[in-house]
Image 1 (cartoon, rainbow, N blue to C red):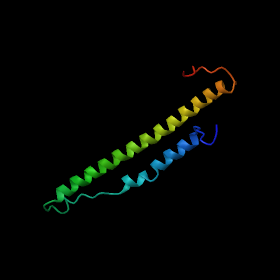
Image 2: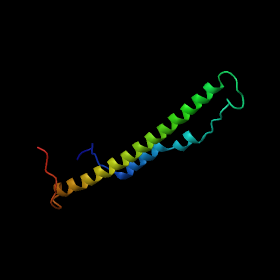
Image 3: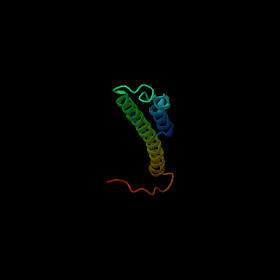
Image 4: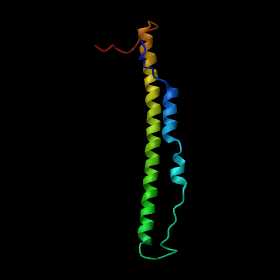
Length: 102
């Protein structure tokens, strides 16, 4: 196919999924401490509210990236299966159930 060949590869998609989720655990493992009970001064409840929102946002980011990683792996598996099915038809190795595009 020349020099610009495209192949699906589940190892590559698994590696991509690992790359986007690498270090995610660190985003949610730090501890945020409430200061409004220990130091009830003006602004302490605002501080605690921002900390709570930050933690919620980081957990949402974590869930989003994990979902994306699963989707990348799933797409890679689908592409690899489709490539194998098309190759059977192209190489005369069997009947392909796929109808060629016109």
